[in-house]
Amino acid sequence: MKGGMGSYRLIRWLAPVTGALAMVVATRQARAVVDVEHQTSEDSCAEADTYFPEDETPEATRARLRCRSETFARQLEESRQRREAEAENQRERNLQTWMKKQEIPVRVMRRNAIDLYGSGGLTSYGVAGGWVLLPVLEAELWIGRRNVSQWISTGYFQDSRTCAGARFKWLMRSQGNLTPFVSAGGADCWANVSYEPYNSGLPTRDGTSAPVTGGLGTAAAHVATASGGVAWMEKSGIRASLEYVYTYAFYSQTTLDDMARTQDASMRAAWGQRLESDRGGLRLQVGYAF
Image (cartoon, rainbow, N blue to C red; front, side, top):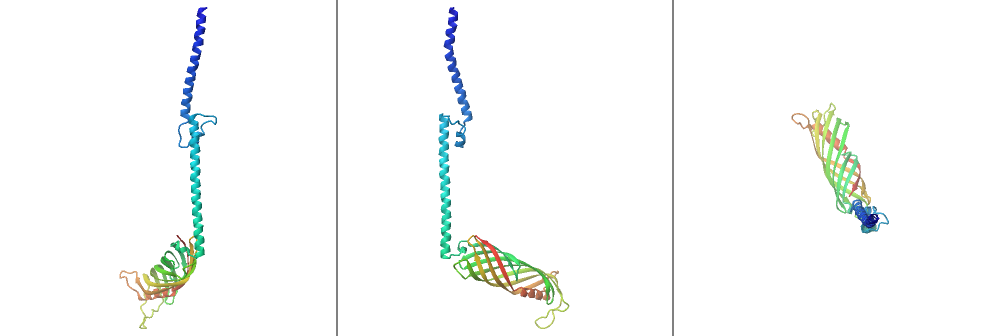
């Protein structure tokens, strides 16, 4: 009887101790799980979402506070960027309104330009680059091409030419985006040519006939240019011009493709006649200023 009572007392004494030990072990295991599942993340809101809403532990509370702080800071930064963008847009609108009121041309703000052109006369098409030096003065470099095959008064002449030049444009109106202009400049041309003359030679200055040769060769010329027209530019930078271009070749030469590189008089006369027939033409130029 006494032995049974002793065992009973021992069990009653060990039961609370065993329960306490179990709670300690369980708590440590739970903390270990929390530590594994809730590692600190760069995204505080993502970390806060890993806690249950009813979780009021210090770790969960700190994660939620960090999330609120980061969200508030992000909202402040977005608001600042939005205000800056709105202020920049407002400044741009105010500038455009002021420029329109004062009739200040867009070319004052957009001084550089790249253009493409189609033309009659010396070249058929090409590309040009312009730089506004003053509100009424623009410098331009251009290069163009033309291929011609046709009968002339002395035979059949073909040339594939490239011309490159420079010019200055005087923009007559210092206000507004539509202005008349005139230009002056110079250019060099070089070409591969082919000439098949008629039976008779070309007349020379003394009235005699030059010997007829013809054939394949190369040609070159120095040219003076002048033009007049109208130019327009839109506020976005798109621009266009229409003009009549006049050219005058003050020097020309041709050379046959032979071993001696002979300068052929009849081919030179034909080349000069070709340049003379291409003296004038309309030129439409479209491009973008920046």
